[in-house]
Length: 190
Image (cartoon, rainbow, N blue to C red; front, side):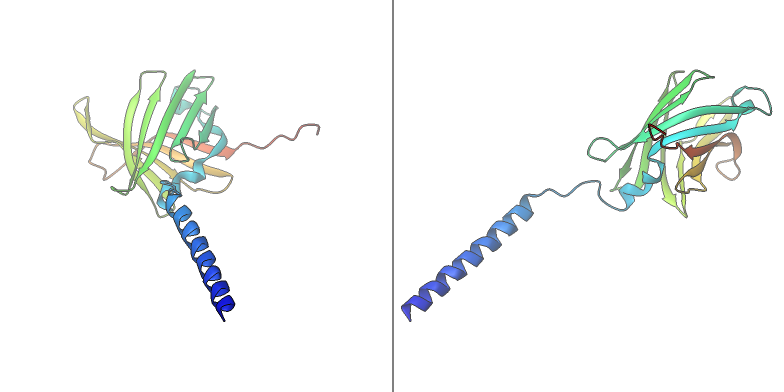
C-alpha cells in the first residue's frame, strides 16, 4: 500500500513539475509585436517589382513608358515595410518605411528621395485597397492633400496611383499612375 502511494505521489510530482515547466516557458516566450492581422495588411507589397507608367507623367515623351523597379522588404522583426524605388532613366531614387500603429489603428509611412523629398502619410487598408494621405498643406495659394492608393491588388500585379486634391478630398487628380508586375524568378541553367 505504501509502495502504491509513493509511486502515485512521485508520478503526481513529476506531472506537476512538467506542467510548471511548460507553463513557465510559455510565459517567457514573448509575443511577436507585429504578428496581428492588421500589421500584415501591407504584405501584398512585399517582393521585387518591375514598374511601368506613362512617361509624360514624369516629364517624358507622350506615348512612351517610364520604367523602374521597386524592392519591398520586411526587416526589423518583420515590423517594418521598407521600400527601395529606382527609376534609372529619370535618375530618381527613393525609400520609404511603413509601420502599423496598433493604438491608433492606422498605417504610417515616411518617404525620402534623392531630390530632397520628405513626406509623411497615414492611412488604412479598407475594401481591398491601401490608401495613405498627407496632411493638408499650403502650396501656391491652395491647400493640397496628396494621397497614394494601392488598388487592383493581385498576387502578381497591382496598380498604384499618386493623386492630389485641392478641395479637401472631395475630388482627386491623377499625377502618377504606376503599374506593378512581380519580377519573374530566373532559374539558372535554363
